[in-house]
Image (cartoon, rainbow over all chains, first blue to last red):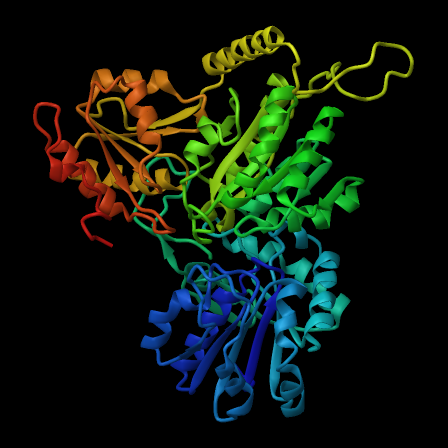
Length: 236
Length: 370
């Protein structure tokens, strides 16, 4: 997989941006790149990049997140260190942008630097199983709103079709016509298909670039199951 | 199989409300339920509905009162401090016998508390909150699927009994995402001859009001209303039982706490402790009969709650204190781990002569566990 110096993940809220950003940063680190990830989500105070702090640290990925992330302070402020991502050009930078246009406003202050350097990939994370982006047309609307808010045009699409723990190979393959249509409408290529590890394995050969993802574990049982199980991963 | 979608708990409530026929949403933003308002803001204009962000919680609950009096399916949503503000309106709505649907996605308290999940509004929801003698139907979902199905159920019950149905969720279920489908609860519709829809000069005008100038009339109305509440108590209690057939320890928990408790019950079974779970789905009416039955069978109860011990009082009342009830709790946004619940079950299983020692009464949190 080829990498740009700065990779940004944006999209509809709940589309899977944070999980993908974290797993992509871990992939960069595994490839031996000096990597930093920044949590620029000022909208949702839950499901933060910081929830994966331990894994990121173990992999040698630097984590830059708002000072009050995961606390009770619901404060939409960004850390000054985040500028390092655009200024330190020896770094591979991953930016996790907040959901929808509201989340993308926070991106605006970095946009001039990113555009000036020109070595970036702005990825639109799409999940057709989400209710407000069930059609490519609705996804395109969200895409345009985010671009208007953040000032940075998208360069590619990430197929993150999933139904959390119910995701199967078919969930992803059924989304291919949707992704093709979104690609036609936007004029952008589908760069990556992201899926939980077991699904990602099954996807080999079906789609070109696959990002296998490890997901955060929660200890709530899955409601459909009669017998509650050991902790199983859920999408955040 | 019905189509599956991946939804946040808050979105599931909003979409289910629309499917239940709700076309009027009045609210004021507060974490962790704002996705409900955001969803309504996006969808209502497209389906000819009304989304209105009022100037305050008090304004929005009174808009609900007005739309409900006009016979509309109407809702508002908020989180703990916001529900306190709405409580005056909830009392007026109860005093006027109009149906309303209200969502509380709880956060930590008292006061501003915090934005992390909590279940500390159990008293407020089930015992009042507002002034006067009144009740609300209180539904406690434990999954995103139930956020949707209990929302439809709530609208049905509100219309059926002309009273408020409240979803008492918490920040975790509001924010978490799970795959769900929508077709599992049928939307019921009820005639509303009492509604303020205009007489068309063809009938006497209706009055919706909670003011009674004559004390005997107010008393009569209160007695009649409590007859209605008794019918609700007799016919609408909902609960889930898990491994209760031969249980000797009964764990009780609602909402997200029940999801953790279920894991702990399974772990206790693996250790040979006969544990079971009763999960109240309606907190009012409280499933007293199930608890009473359990009290004939089990040695002890363990109440798992994200508060300082609120539902535990209803368990003691329902079981008339015939068995010891211990508390396993966390507050402030902390959630117990299955291991913490398991150690409470172990302590209860070790109890002798139906009594717990002082040490066993303390919760893991009080012992300084994490």
